[in-house]
Length: 378
Image 1: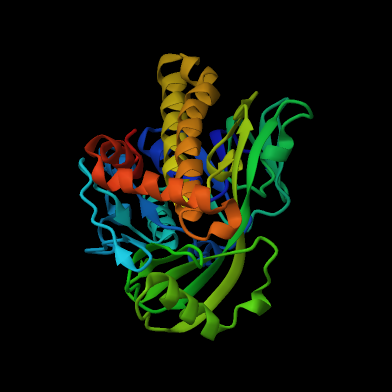
Image 2: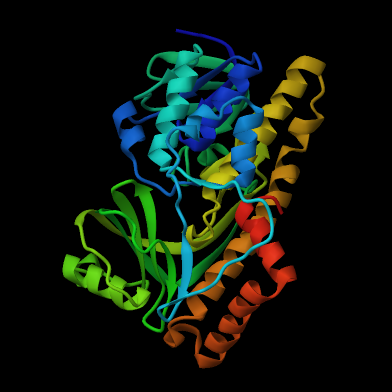
């Protein structure tokens, strides 16, 4: 079976579904392909902060409903240093919301399908043809004008780039995170810097939290029984933490990754397919939404005005923004970890990192720039 559409979107995560909705609202034909089942996609747990830029983008496109009824109310995530909560008074208008990513994906899916969008789950054996642009799966051929690779770091889209075209820039950190999904309200909520290592407790729902604990990169899950998770979390926050049932545990290596260029021929990379930031920065969704809006506007300009300039400049436009936020992500990851356990970078670095942190909370100028990055408007 052969069908033609303007854009084939590979991957039904935040980047792919946001793009699909933006194209649909602009009258651009698209098909979204996802190799997993709908149930799997909507239950997959990942970080869930939509910063101010993302909130405003959804509102401008008339898509506020994808988070408005599901954002967690009155979430105040603080910073704790050796058990003492730091006073935060950042300048700026922060409209960021905590919305579990699986909830955002579910809502984007519902809105897309309700508007008549073409979303195909369990699309197996996807292959891309960049010479005569087309995407194939099963017995279906989808000729198209553009292909949007939104299928994450381990997807097939990036592998379709010819040898020698892509350059991978990366940085690995000397520590990892134990990431735990627990059935308990996040209290306290925020990030704790402590000589034992960094810790985090972030809401993922009214009665669910994602817990993070800094650990050596070669650590093993067997070293982290449930009792140790809760005792270590309490020690690093400097206050009792109520335990709950742990639903999932995994070790997460921290890294920055950028693939350049983000465009070759009819294929464009969006979101994690093009770049990864450490979860400390909470900017994965931010970058995915930025890519989706830049690409959607470029396709609309090409379709409505026969002007390919925005498509031609897609990679340059996105990478300028990506590198800005990679710099922020690397900085905040370094500072938050180096200010804690001195066994990683030494006591001199611990003290300079703490001085940097103090500056963020005492200098209006430093605080304003920090707030801009947190809000995603820098």
